[in-house]
Length: 282
Image (cartoon, rainbow, N blue to C red; front, side, top):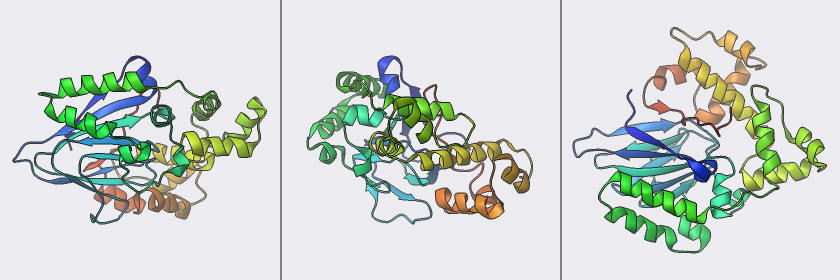
């Protein structure tokens, strides 16, 4: 299925914080679709300038969760489902690891993962609603993007020195599935418990969650490249799962489905993976 949105990459210092913007704008006669975003462990900030957007996680139905004007979601540990309607007008800010903390200075272990947060309530201010109102009056997407970049550059904070070894440890993982906490603890002369607490504070997840996710992300990428039927035993062997039940457990955890139903119901349809960047976890 062709993409219904546009990615806008960041440059300069802001690229250390924001991975990209993802913009969706649909016409009056657009046919409603439900999109499914694969887990990414990222945090997103949504500016909704159009029709309210209903969301859900995993296999939940659309109910009370929606984004009226503003919303912070994440870290995304479950599949995010969102409804794209006629006259949808969204700008989604996707943060790099530690990027949300650098902009908001909010410990991520204080945030609920499967919830929509009002950014002004998180910070105890009204600045984001004022920014939303300014975006709403601008004549085109480029001027809106320029304003967001200006705001981002004005409010970006230097990275805490405590977080730097965490980011280095994440990149050092590469294609291995070892937990980095012990190695980081040795390099920094800190306890593994301290490293784990810092992961939760700055990034919003544990090293165990990270290594599990990195493997699953590679599994999804592998499946998406298959031209014919998927050899599930080969997947189990290639990515170090104990057996097929172990693989199924991960699919249920992240996507609330089984591997075969994923291929049948999602693959090649309205399922998307967050676009990687140079600062992504590769």
